[in-house]
Image 1 (cartoon, rainbow, N blue to C red):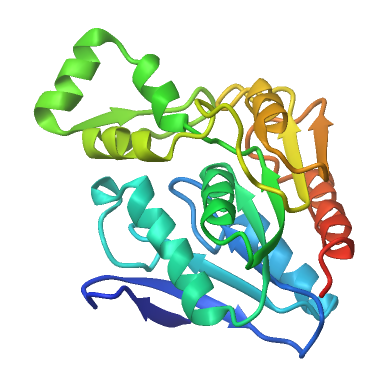
Image 2 (cartoon, rainbow, N blue to C red):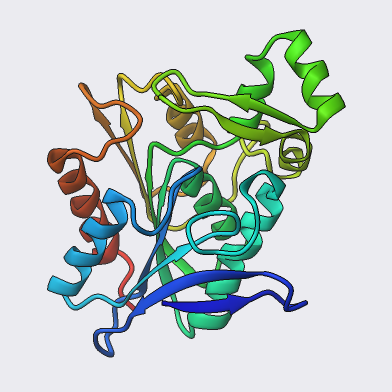
Length: 253
């Protein structure tokens, strides 16, 4: 486990870099979801899969998650995108494929827009672009006022047992990174989107909207009829790695 500091050296993310072999296959990078980490079921499954298949692979804890610096409630989409950018700038010499889960799917798409020459493929599992807008629109006026006044509000998803602190700073900062409000999203890399049809936290029509707006002609969307938001069952994870293989086949350099 290693630390990677930002430009001002006042905060860091934590990562593991599994460099297996020199290869013509882009490195695989996993982007975890909200309140998750590089110890999640998906991350561990991908680590094992990439080791078995001799793929270079990076997992990391973004700011305010796992062993990275900072408190969760102090973070924003801009900070988390900075975390992804640190990995791509400092650890990736050539090209990469991003596998993003939930919020990590949103960050993967934002990174593809920021690094169009470096990102050669995407796998987004239950991507949650603009989830901050959904949170804001689904809380009461009283709670909106409370969040603005106090800066923090404890919220929970429909299938979440625990509440988590969402800051007004996160809601406001995210407006700079909204995707679904765009007429089109200029990503032209191969992309697989996987979504559960029983997902109540991020309904699968969000992914349909993404598919309609992204300019790439190499997009595949896989709907899992009995899948919820987590998509961490063995059968779900196999769908994820199958998509990774399909994207790799289109991304070799």
